[in-house]
Amino acid sequence: MSKRGSYAIRISGLGDGDHDFPFELDQQFFALFENPEIKKGMVQAKVLYEKRVGILALHFDLSGEVEVICDRCLELFMAPIETVQTIFIKLGEAAGEVDDDVIIIARDEHEIEIAQYMYEFIILALPYQRIHPEDKDGNSSCEPSMLKKLEAHTVNDPDQNSKSDPRWDALKGIIEKNK
Image (cartoon, rainbow, N blue to C red; front, side, top):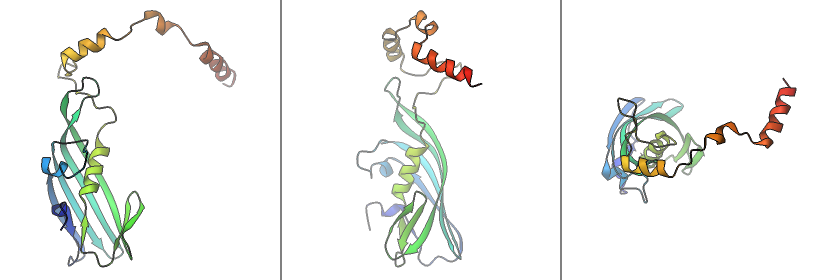
């Protein structure tokens, strides 16, 4: 059994129907990955293995929070994640991926390793820009000393907003003519 074996779903011997597999993804889970972007978190994973005539699918429902670095102040914070994903399974001679959501497993396979899929779904569920959420008053909850440093290095030129770039002015003229 691999070191990720506790995140495998045994598919042989299961009858037709839906089969639930719950997982708790914590620090031990994130430690399985080399150079992980996330080192800490608590995510509840509900995996539904759907087996019907002609259909094999894994439905993932992941929710919880993971620790990430704030893009603004560089401090760690817990970011909520929630995602629902599906992977369809085909049986074939050799394992492989057909598409982002279709995998092939060998006919003689007895289990499907899902740790990598769950990790990738968690990463994809994170927002593109990771910033501390605002507090109940609408103020940033970033590290105050870092916000002061950022403000000290921000250029606030009031004339900059009123000036327009002549290259864009020419394009605006073309757009106006075509209306």
